[in-house]
Image (cartoon, rainbow over all chains, first blue to last red; front, side, top):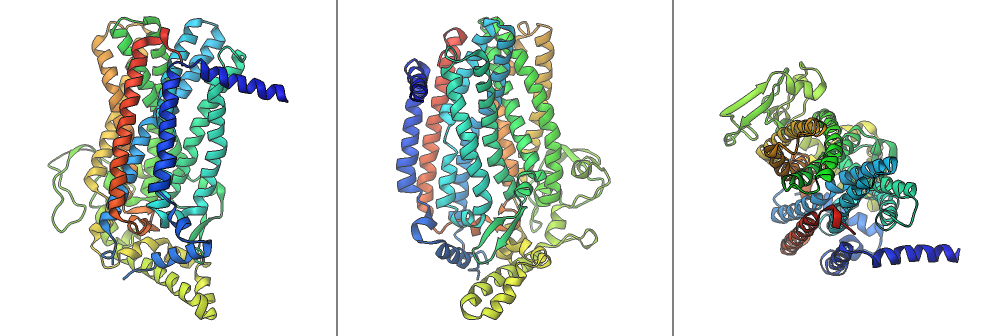
Length: 71
Length: 520
């Protein structure tokens, strides 16, 4: 079992180490993921219903109130 | 009734979602199609043992890798937007989207990311057959990813297989099969992925044409063109076939979109299809009516497209606004009245829940009565437009019309180009036809244009609905500041433009290096 994990590790390790163009692409991917999950998700895109209400009942009540609030 | 909604917030939220989706969609179709093209090329390599095919496969795999890396996860932003900008919508659809998106995340994404590593790193480390299997599984995985997302989108266009729970304000799935195998979902999936195959084939042909024009890597280019043209030709035939299926579905489930695609104002039997038309400005006090100073029509073709019967009555925009008793078409006013009853019933149910158990029970029973649900709840979204002008419930007719017609025109142009590419590839006469090689190069941006136009038809044509007939965009949007949405809109515009430029720069550099140097 240990050998199998080592084999898989070496497979990925060698693969990443021998990349040429791939290294540049990984930098782009990591910068993009950092921007999306750290900057955007935390500062700009909170899940509003999760953030503002503590349980599903409150969320349901709020949405029903909003959906039926017509003048 | 709609005055108390912040339409600027609705417009900016829509704009932001459209921007994100359209940018994301720049990367997806090439991934969908190129993954299968690579798998076909590698299969030929494994069957023949010819090292040229290995070189060809590795070059296109690098192009695939660049596109995949730049495009990967750009779609996640759409999910962020659901939770922030469209929180009421997310709550309303929650249970329906949960299953397909969870399957997408677990099955397809892991399938893709596991086998993609073998595909790129495993050339000298695993057997030829295992490597080939990994390449095919990457292709299948990426297409399965797309399938679940498209099923979710199809449900928004034609909500089926669910029941609305008035206590939670959520739609609950009744039949997974109805959601997954609805004709809208099947046609949408097939039409969308096959146009990805066409786009990828055209990109392969365009890059190969560039090599032929430069008189470089001639054998590589010619062989790539044979695979690209065969795969593309099969793809475009499928696109046309599934496009026909999609049109029939749209005519049944989204008649206003169907009428807008053709700018058909007056409904008619033997309705003609506009083969070519230039629209004038919308006529005053006649919402949706545009004169045509120039129009070439194919008699009966629109009726045929709607039902495979040239005598079928196709409702026009006027019928859908003012109703048509002869053809059992309700007016917008009638639908708004019924929708308003559904909204009012939901409001009363909510109030009665804690104050009047008997009334609650009586109202709750309505939401379990299929007839009441059909007669009232199925028009829920129209209730927001009670007393409003009909124009508030119309999509942008001219944009839908032009997007549809340009997309179809480009589709038939691709059919011609791919057919010629295949014939001249087989006869080995492509290298001598420089004009055609230039045509192939310039067809690549047109393929991107066509695929984006397809999205415009699907999404602009269904406005104002986020969920057809049930939830308009103004009821779906969160109560947040329009300024926040504007800030993130411009942030995305800049970020995605940088990504698109990065993709083009890296890709063009890699293409310039050619297959000999192509590594990953």
